[in-house]
Length: 613
Image (cartoon, rainbow, N blue to C red; front, side, top):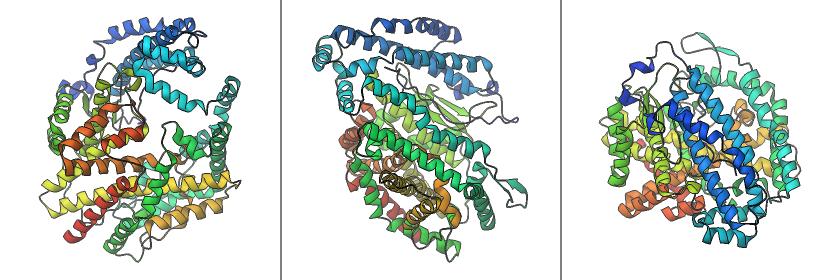
């Protein structure tokens, strides 16, 4: 059994010379890693102790399937090692991310990463042996050897057993993984490292080379001509190399289809959802319900068209503001914390008091400093210690929403870790974005309520509508396109560039409606989106937002009973399947109601926006 997956982050570092050094920041605004280990010496002592343990795994090899006592002893030993590895990794990750220039922590990070790999290799026999263990041995371990809390874990292994192959076949599947996953590696290096983007003139007439970051920034520019120039320039290399991208794209699909068929799944979609026991009906329900409720999206597109004064809007008009920009408001850290706390008062003292504890006890690293990792993250569940949050707070409104978002993750991890044994002290990706977007939704409602000017309210409403566009409708559109292309290849088709263009144009046109003119460039979006290589992943962005809006609606309607169910959701971890955990909270993702919660809120905000504007 591999150690519990340790959450890392995926942000790149930007070192800015004018940034303050970490030593210039107040201690109260930096996370306190002594909650994990008192100092580096204590970390080294624990590392040395754990370093001696991997060899002990060999004592259990070949024994656990025939002895309930050996099975229990092995699992408890593996749990002990995994808990230590998690804390060792977290300490170093936080130290390293505080200042990426410090070689000491980069070296320590490499050492703990290597140790995790060694433990994974030494313990790799555990799951295959458990899968070959008779049910009566497992039941004896549960009832007589202290593994009662592992019952759901064993039940889940049995569920997956039908799609587990023989030892030799599993070895062949493992050997083929590098080849079958190669399409993404080729796509990634080609699109991120080798593609050359043209230069264009920006809003001020300066010649700039287009990049991913500059492309996305351009979509918010009030200069329509610049938006168009940047948009067309960004897509040019994807069009120029579209034949190559189509081959990479098709090979990715074929690799996923091979895996699904080799394991006897009915489809690639079923195979992708199987790991978390998500019924295919949940995926289909999302697409079907959104397709039946495209009117608010079409309405939003029409409002954009009218406000921008165009006969048709274009894809590069999708996110630009349609209002005169209000004065940019800056928030202090204490103001941001206060807004988040005030917006979450509805959750009761238990939740709010834990937030205050996190803020008051240095769980958060607040400000950007020289060498600090960029972006934001919550460290996730690390058993035996609390989660931490990295911020790079600059005082912008987006930073306030980022704080609410990351504290949603933080509280999810905290409540899970405090209420679940190690084996369930984590949560699936299907649930991960629910708690974060739940907090964002409540913050938005609070900010709209306390806004003092029409401009502020309209700006906040537009922020929400753009979020729904990007996170809910767009990700569902991607999910529908993904399902279509897999179905076509599973039926024996090989998708040419022209077919991929037509399939994407069709779904894009449907989602945006008559107000949108689909430029030729947009038809090549399939060639540039890395998420299409993640194997039916994107739908979870949409279901996460839908579930969070449904839960917010229940909290508003029912009060304390819904709050209590939500807190139980936060505490559940992996003690049950994600679909059941949400159902117990009051949201059934296999039914249209949850999906309609986003659509209903969007319609309400559109009504209010049109009344005010």
